[in-house]
Image 1 (spheres, rainbow over the protein chains, first blue to last red):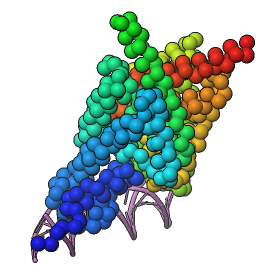
Image 2 (cartoon, rainbow over the protein chains, first blue to last red):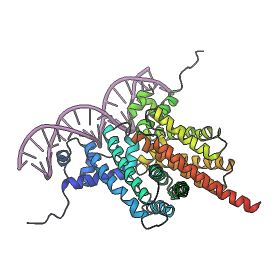
Image 3 (spheres, rainbow over the protein chains, first blue to last red):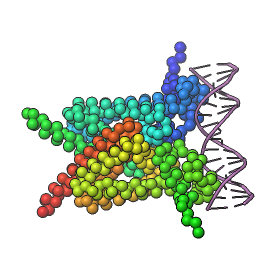
Length: 204
Length: 204
DNA sequence: GTCTATATGCTGATAGAC
DNA sequence: GTCTATCAGCATATAGAC
């Protein structure tokens, strides 16, 4: 009964697509690249994913998306002040982006922009992933004292700034966009907390 | 001496690529699509652009990029209060995005994200376009009373939020991301102006 | 479930007549 | 400067033995 050390062919295929999409997006990668990277034959891909490239890309987007949003609390929890926490998250992202040699930080955003008008199935999957991000993010901000109505707006602004700064930073090879974006979102946190405080004091 | 009503073959080719990239990005479009859309034969494309697809895409990015940044003052000039102006620009963008049926609002951001690790020539062109945006944007903010050092940070945050919200909005088919991003950048303007005012009052 | 061999169509690019 | 015909290679996907 020899232990299976390697992961399943299916899992290796999904990981390979996720990694390839992170670097090259969706349109530019080929199924040959995928099977080569996963060290699997062509037939296995179409055995596990009968609809081929689109289907395996969808699965990879869901997997990566779920993993990515877990970073948010991980980066922000250590900081008591929410404004500091937001800036720390962006500054950490900036550091990672620079240290990695300006790699693509988020395949979901990249692929979403690329295929929104061409691959309706993948667009819907990307939308599901983003809706999950927004829900989880809003819940996190509520838990940290932001009013329910402002939380959704805040997480939308934060994710937008994050995704956009990823692209600018990677293109310009500069950590500036992410740091600047972090300051803007921190300013928004400040504004939202001030609003909440006003409401609170009017109640008290 | 019959007037030439149509544009030159060269111009039609560049326009066709710009429009196709706006919708589908770079990797997904083909030179056949380009020549078909421009109603030009294959040979003409390679006559005017010997390096082919990459070269014509580069030209289209430069042309579109230069056109896009002109919208910023156009949208913001009518509003005296800079915070209002910023929100108006984002709200206008949100309206356009929704009314257009969630079309791609900025080919430069889309293409930049897609090819940053695969097409070094195009990445550098996209970087040049963005550096031009940043310079012009920073100058605009300075002209409207923002301190020089804050202006650059502000325009970086604004462009990041704009590009990211384009992607989220198009994927989610929602105007919310752009509106939320606009409020965050307005908060940043508020913060930056307050800072400046503090400095000013210490001088006065 | 795994793997090889292959089908069919399309890719970017070129040659060369006009 | 325009246009047609065509190249060599690669794309996704499939068939069918094991």
